[in-house]
Amino acid sequence: MTNQTPESRKRGGWMADYREERRQFAIAARALALLWAGFWMYFSLAEGYRQQLGLTETLQGSWQYGLLSLIIALIAFWWDVFGGILLISAGVAWFMHYFPRVELGYTLVQIAPPLIAGVMLLASSRKPKENTQ
Picture 1 (cartoon, rainbow, N blue to C red):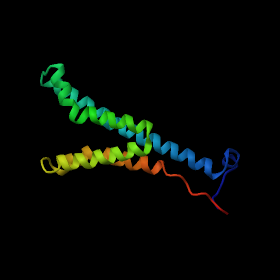
Picture 2 (cartoon, one colour):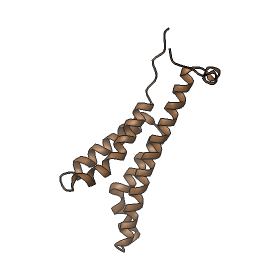
Picture 3 (cartoon, helix red, strand yellow):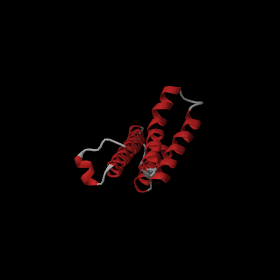
Picture 4 (cartoon, rainbow, N blue to C red):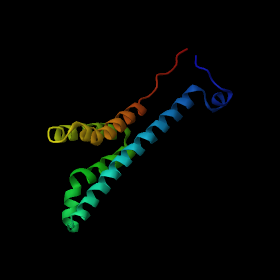
């Protein structure tokens, strides 16, 4: 039996507490995914601006990492499991793409946020086992 405060008993016991913790965990995962995608979208657009490329060339260059990251993060807002799988897949795919060419530290900075956010989303989407006592 878990220690319950009188407030948690009023709200519905341990199950209500668990649902609230799961919801907060999912919000944190979505925020991490959005920060990761927003940073890379900004970085891609800023790099195109720095190189004085036109709008078309900048958008073509930002598609590879920035816009695709943003689309995946937005999908994670609506579908936890599918978004979590996409985030983990994106992290693995970018690791396989960048690791042979770039040093490991830079690669880990790129892939750690989507992997962590994806695992958090999948963990927050799990249903609790019912207490049969």
